[in-house]
Amino acid sequence: MPLYFAFDELMDPARMSALSPQVRSLGHGRLPRHRLILMSGARVTIRRDPLRQVEGTLYDVPMAAMPLLDRRFSGASKIIQPIIGQGGSKRAVMHLLPEITQTASQQDRAKLVEAARAALLSGAYCEEIETGMVARRKPGTALFKAPSSTFKS
Image (cartoon, rainbow, N blue to C red; front, side, top):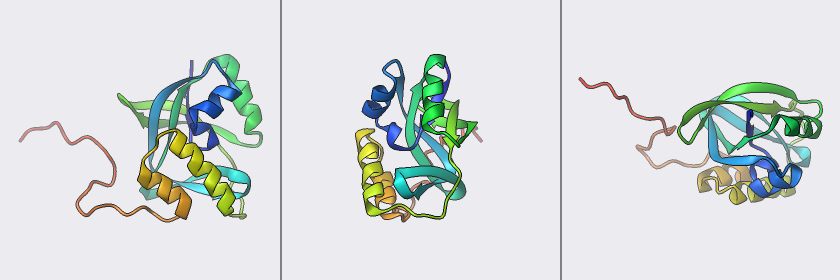
């Protein structure tokens, strides 16, 4: 069964199970060095950005359920990308919508924040979605939650 990374309204496990009950949530996932682009109609895509990360939910999707996701994201390109999840990096399928110039309304942002909170994503990431600004970090905290080196000198 392929892994799927949801960073839109489907990051809420209840919404994903309503779409396909046989899909199993594997917890949170992160895509470092990318940022979320919110468009009108609560549609999202991603773009490279070395200072940000996209959070979402990682799912185990049966092959029979993949056409449901493909139909939901008609016009999107499907890519495979390494996602950092519990237990390390895993390759997961993602749908990328073409970027349009219409920006998201406050209602669109509220829908996405609601899904992010239901998925129990970090408060800083929810704040970033809500405001469109990078959440402030405490001075001295790491940019990404990468493991430290295991090499000993």
